[in-house]
Image (cartoon, helix red, strand yellow):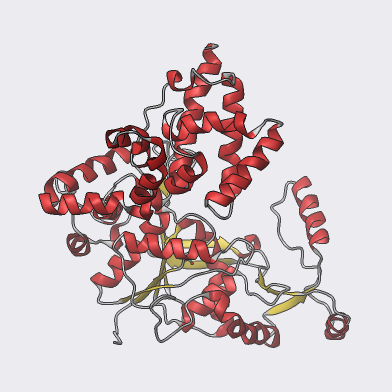
Length: 485
Ligand code: GLU
């Protein structure tokens, strides 16, 4: 079905756990399309081949589906402007790089990573922002041809005006002016032929007929590069709207060090997707106090993209808890409540897998809640007493918890085998035996030293829940180190 309304998109990069910030931007675009009779599409931006994985892509799709959002075009549903995954579009970008070279809007650069690093180092030392210095900007055509013929690696960079400012209008920020002098000669096509984010993003937004680009404010500074590309190609640019970032209560950028940021954390703890979307949607509406509880239809009706705040969207977990409680109590019938609870308990097969792990460890079924309940609990109630029976000292326990917490972030895959391998590597690194490293983790993750097998439990709980438990455990143990207990 073709519509004449606006076309908007969410364009996640599958490089990590799906973030609530992605749900926030997706919701804005979804409401925008719904309000204006437009089309909401999903495009996977995986030009960063070293960090993007199909596993994360699947997680992004699953997490966004869990929120209740749906898209009319995307890698999973197809559509008239596919493919919707940038790595599958690689060949489409090549002619555009050539077009810019032919028109004189771009140039080939042969600078090696080592030379660029030295250049940046010198700029840093001189207190200047790092920026390409233009060494290859005016290479003669013959030199370019011969160096390429000799097999030298080359990238394509865009040319940037030297004087004046890039002036544009942003739907949230109003009139913006950014000096061209501060804009880098961005690489457009990398040495391996893959486009960079900027190049692929602009080409795809054009080919996919995107009319409005609504995304996080961290992209505002990239708009001059994007506008220049639209001009170089002779394409009409979309309307830009840069939404204020979500922030922690202390106004810092929402980060997993301070608050859980993974969508999967909120689903695992039993937040209802309707409540999470309601909470995020409140950043896009103007409503009097007392009228906060809104369904998706009500959010669409009240959606007000012309009056957005630049102040930052504070991720106030207490408010989310309050809304979630109200959704559970006021919006679900008893039948719905039971059905939703069972569905939640079964998420990622944790109920059945938890039971399988428990079978050999109990003498009565009534022991199950005590043994396996931590797989479902939002809080395992850690106190200094929880760690008192360990053989490691509080300082050692803390070192173990902190090392594991940091290293688990670097894992690409999250499953029993990868957790097993990582914890063995961490034990070696710490110069401790695995059986010394695991007891503090048992307590941190389950609240008890007698529980289910650790690696399986961590895999079932998921990275975002484990991260949060390790964080709480480290805080509790740090207080023991401080007080000498
Ligand atoms: N891939 C970018 C991101 O993940 C999308 C930015 C945009 O919407 O242009 O943030």
